[in-house]
Length: 120
Figure 1 (tube, rainbow, N blue to C red):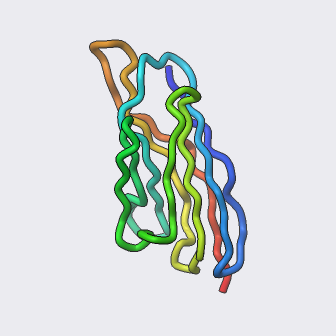
Figure 2 (cartoon, rainbow, N blue to C red):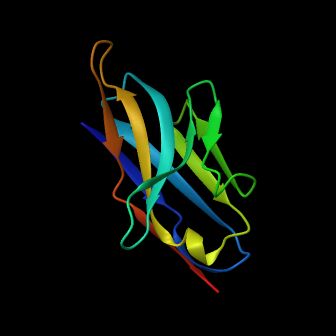
């Protein structure tokens, strides 16, 4: 079994910054892509940013230039530095990981989510 535990959410004023972290633990052979998604009330979950094992990154247009994703392969962690936050960034943020549990078996895991609220 694999667990993803997020931390770092909270309440911040517009223009402020927050840093989200996610740690993966459990039966892990290796982790391929890791990423962050978010879901605002009444909306579908959407991609925020992903990072591959070789640290290639991808961002949604809405956060490009403001958010930075990074990972530590030795610690099985992924972080999201969020700067210049806007009220529209308010959502529950979910960590995601494509985990190879054994050399032959891989599956996707999700964290429990952490709330980010940006006040205007």
